[in-house]
Length: 399
Ligand SMILES: *Cc1c(COP(=O)(O)O)cnc(C)c1O
Image 1 (cartoon, rainbow, N blue to C red):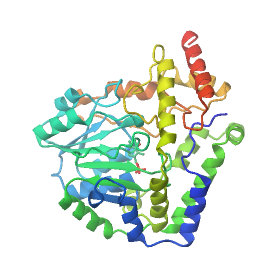
Image 2 (cartoon, helix red, strand yellow):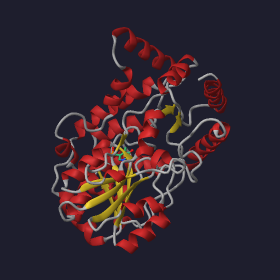
Image 3 (cartoon, protein in one colour):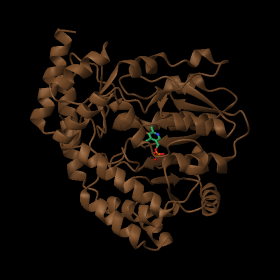
Image 4 (cartoon, rainbow, N blue to C red):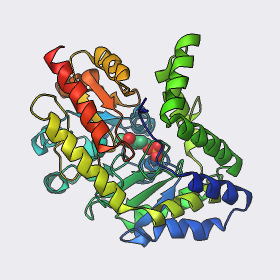
């Protein structure tokens, strides 16, 4: 069975993490090491997670209560919780299914007098075109925040220099993961200074918590091996566990209650050390090969299967979703052919505020309802990706 996801970290990174947990380096110096490879290190901040950094950013921006924040209509639920927690109103802007981001006109149409900021997510690994959005935002005096959590790696993208904030995640399921950690690039030095001061007052995440993440990652790595994955799925079926839910719960960075208490922490020295190592050793060639494979799969399917955002350039193909009328049936067929696909429970569609029914994101809803995320990662050989394409094409002929 080709597992749905392979955690993107090596055994030697995990061993390094264990070593750095026992003998942690100097935290401040290691944080500087994480910030140094970005275009303006003095405008860069290492955080515990994108959610931590986003929470910090909104706190430091201190927008007036009930300001509207326009957001890409698909994101992870916590990002919306964070916006609301700061007394702001998230307003979804529907996606263009070809690009998996809102069109400049859609952003523009959602702006009201209460709008203060825009959060654009580069979904699935494809980079949205920032220029027209930035131009529109400048006209309306809006802040632009880029959520690059899904777009690190292959493209070499490090955030748009004119965006007010660009956020990169190194959480467990992300490309180049450090089992947590995030890098935020902040354009305004005053804003960044406030964020740094606020973050410095947070407690430091315990390194023993990082041990837990290391152990979990070792488990995920084991499950990434075909035979172990098949065995695990089989055991789950036998004892009546929902494998899908189990994996999603286990992959969650901040489980349970008290989200904000968990977010408001500084990254530990061990986490920063692993993140620094991941950034230093990042292999652009491997990422490029993977992107080429994604392009090939997209063109094999293009005529017959809807692949949202698959033709966006540049693209890392962090995930590869296809849209079908009966996702469950396709997942079963793929499972029989040896591919563990999923409906992807970690993303959500953002609801429109009651007084803005026109912003209801119907396209985004359709996409998430029909999406099947294929197992697709650098370790999947080209011939397997072609065989998977054949299963998908047969599914069209015989729906
Ligand atoms: C993963 C993800 C996040 C959160 O990143 P963390 O570093 O885990 O907080 C935010 N937005 C999107 C679109 C994501 O995919």
